[in-house]
Length: 348
Length: 284
Image (tube, each protein chain N blue to C red):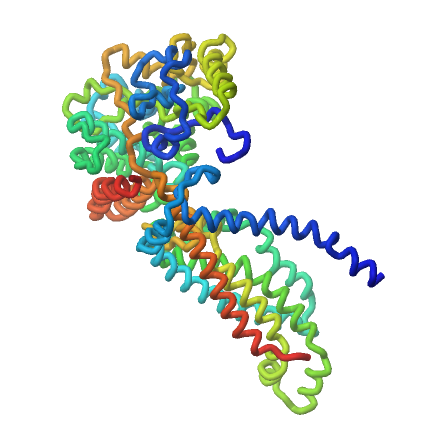
């Protein structure tokens, strides 16, 4: 961004990223591409101006292996709460030799290639429920009201797992993908972006599905997948008028033209939140849309409010320590609640 | 010939000077200026005075990293040089066959990049730790520290060994023969003849290993990443994390201030070392 001809189009990852780049973002409120957005909440705002435009919607949840689940005598549709998920996972774990798997869940790897699935995506659920109740996402402090639920689901992940909890620190994202793709585990927490990896590894559309991450909150039978975006298009306000105009035209082309929308839907397998976007072949994204249509409540990506990378790193450390020694949950609490306060203060 | 050189030397110096200006002097001055600013991109800065330095020095993690780095640099310097000199001594003995092969083998780890080495050693050490039932590196700061030491030794001993071999070979053989004639033991020859004549080599090796120890970054990033809880985070990694893993517009400036302090520290320490060992050098 400090080059003499800097990029005119760049991405920020939500309100936290915007804090750094606010002064570089042009106001996109009146642009054509802004008018194409299907939902006004998808524009990233600051001081009443639309500075960023979410251009892709992704969803995550617990990916499951349909065949293995059926072999164990379960149906994904019947699992609609944490208790049912736990009963199912515990049962699969107990019968793992009979079913030919190494565990119910893939390894909850804490290597950097995988830890974000927990420190960002799983942590999103307790954050989401707290923000729904308290509306404190912009506050300097959070309470960690749903940490017990966080503990519950994390315990399930590491107990009914393919590997010993003390080994998690070295497990990678590829480890989990491989365990799932080779049928060594039934459940795998990840998102719609994993579709390409799984199909490339030989899995077919009728083998896989995605269910919401249940953490034991009241009314979660009605919970949907976690859908949202953290890729916001921004136009550099430092660029010349002409360049800004051209960039806006390019963005408009990307979301309206036949060529671009086809590429986004088919080649990239992404769901774009624009009026003329095409349906994607990504089965997870399709499921997310279907669930939303059924009236399931979509869980927002509230992790974009996480105050810094440092918060996630500290949470990761605490989770590794907890996995190796389960008396150390207080460390996770500290990283989650106190860490929020310190990091929030540090970012001001 | 001499005349032409006298007249044209500035022309021959020009490319190097230019490269030095562009690659070192200008960024250095700019970096120094930036440490007094708040900035996101470097051509759009806001002067804040010494605030960055105040915040850098009041960061407790910075001082923890400093002491960790000092401990590491000291231990690694001693071990690298002792082991490298010992191997160099062994491989300059005339009686030994295949010394060239051994020299090559010992030198080879140096050709592998720090990041790759870090990951390889992480796998090896984690394997060992999980076999003996200890906590993995991510939870084990002692293993992280010793892992870094082992890795650095493995990487740098071969390099220093080559320099020591060159030093040992440049000692005139009549000195050694004279010592032999006078009835000196091998041990006496080593301490009284070889070491004093090796002082210039020792100076350069100490300089390299001390500065390498302080500046260590990629090995640190790949092997431990500072885990657990920043306890194995060395200065360079601390600066990197300050710069990149914090949200908010203040942190780039603070990272930059830390980098300037870091630079002054390393220069000062290596100056002291150079002065101390130079004074021991003898003229042949």
